[in-house]
Amino acid sequence: MTFAVGGKMDWLCQRCHRESVSQSFFRPGFLICFMGMLLTLVMYPALKTLGIQLHSALTGSYVSGHHSVVLINCPNEQAAKDIGRAIMERRLAACVNIFPKSVTLYFWKGEIQDATEILLLVKTRTSKVQKLTDFVKSLHPYDVPEVLSFPVEDGSLPYMKWMDDAVPDD
Image (tube, rainbow, N blue to C red; front, side, top):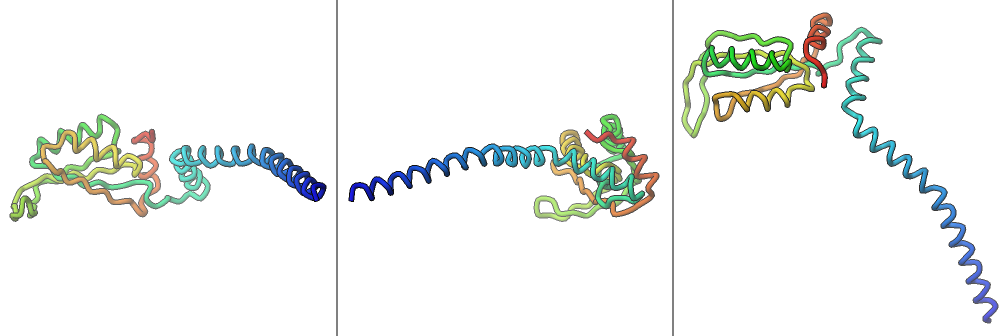
């Protein structure tokens, strides 16, 4: 009876030894796979930009959503010019259009307000929208400035190329 238990113990030890050898063999493979996936996640923004540029170059087409139009309302023409120039100086946009006065109706603190505002139409890369939004909020005179972004679905390819050249992709 002791021999049978010893035989089972030998078989169990051999099996455990074999499994530990196979686990140590597969562990580097798992580590390499994990590191590859982690590197891909970290590199995703750069890989996405490269993929968009490659797709556009090979097909001659525009990739929807690569650029955005941003609307910003300002209280007066001087604020609009100051904000527009600051955006351009930081190369956060390819172009800023300043539209003349418009009447705006909106709710503020539970009441309907009536104001005259100046509208900025900002054309930029979609990848710059958050940086642009944060920058505008930091210098805009309103407590809650209007900064609305809309992705560009299609347009003139030479114009889109010009926008890419005018706005560096960090």
